[in-house]
Image (cartoon, rainbow, N blue to C red; front, side, top):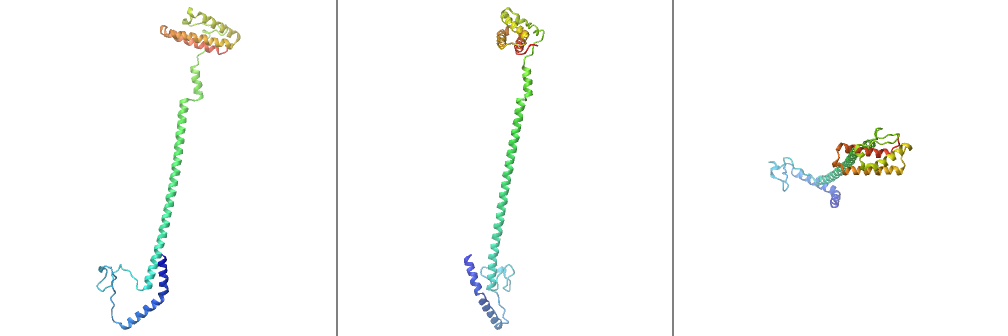
Length: 244
């Protein structure tokens, strides 16, 4: 590029002199050979098929007629090439910028989609967990469903505390436990509630009776066994409740 600039400066400096010399030569030749036809010389390397019978080109061949015109065309080509290079460089920079913006937008959308999917998964997991665990109302219903029923007045007299035992629990082997339980519920009817020591004693007595029944479950009628078991569980629950 520096050499080209130097050459251009030299040509510009010598341009006027060369033009004057060229004009002088043209005038001399015109005066000396007014009626002589000059046949243009075909440039080296040009195909002969581009030239007509008279030696003139049929188009497609562009050349300068003078040295200064050739310099101008060359300088124009250099400027045009530089402009095209700048234009292509600018277009490439714009394309890179657009590609970068698209990449950022794609990452942004991917990130948003990731967090949206994660939130949906968490919400679904929480909903499924809540469904499996149930609500506090569900827990209360389950607790009440599993809670033993209170004894009816025909099974436990709330006024006197008298106990009406199922047939299996009237066996002579259970007489000692029956006496202690009847005394405890008589005190409950009189005082309204059981003392802590008496309450714990009732729980222990009913647990012993249940364990004894379980050891005989194969030898006992199923219906009678279930009735005696339910009665003892309700009796233990009554011990925790106030009379009436």
